[in-house]
Image 1 (cartoon, rainbow, N blue to C red):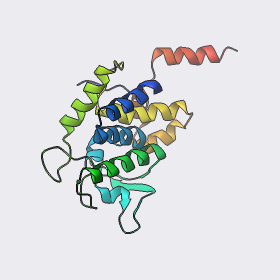
Image 2: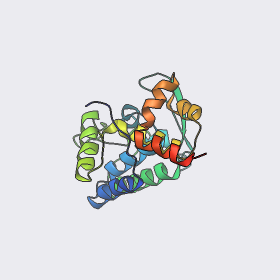
Image 3: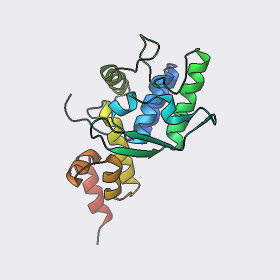
Length: 196
């Protein structure tokens, strides 16, 4: 697999969304959108259940997603922004139309073979990889690219590197730096802008 690259082109992000929607692959669309909007690892995304994001008593989506990360065992609270919420709402409506059971204990990103088993990591990887190849997205693109893409665009929005490190729950800035995927062209643009 190698080191995954962030998707650095906003038009390519939109093309990926349109690709999944055009094929009526709403689950894959939602998986992609939740990935690029939450900065979560794919293992945490695939383990999400509807009760994590939806309050069934109040019949509305939650403002925050609270979870303990599978890899680090650290608690994390993630604001569900409009990109993530729109995709989750679209998936919930799609499941209802398809008569897929939705409850607090049901996984959001279902595999195709059973009533309540999540999509496998390997299948999620194939979905993202195939779409990126078809759309000719540069770099080594896979599931971890979604997490890295969030950080890349956060950095472009001039979000503090320390805050990005905190969002990722990284133990050092060196790890976060690798995630941001800054390349020589981007470094060159800094020198062009700072012409004193």
